[in-house]
Length: 108
Image 1: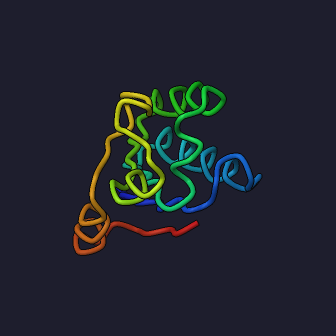
Image 2 (image 1 turned 90 degrees about the vertical axis):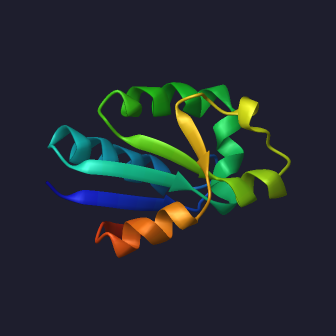
Image 3 (image 1 turned 120 degrees about the vertical axis):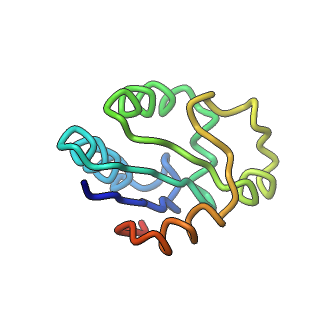
């Protein structure tokens, strides 16, 4: 089984390509791959909005796991209770460990 780590750095509201990336992740998970998405930098801004909460929740049902970089959240004044519960705040060490474990990496 192939494992993927997608690091999303683009603002969910400003970059139309983010939706395509999320759809790709959903399809990979449906096809049996392990998929983790880590939101970093300005990508964490959209995690507070209801618009993307429903979309991300639907994608999570396919098996995609969501994470948000703690430093990015803190730098933008976002508290853990402001994002959906299925998104796990985590350090970027998680990404480094995934790289060391041989996960296929995509930075968007």
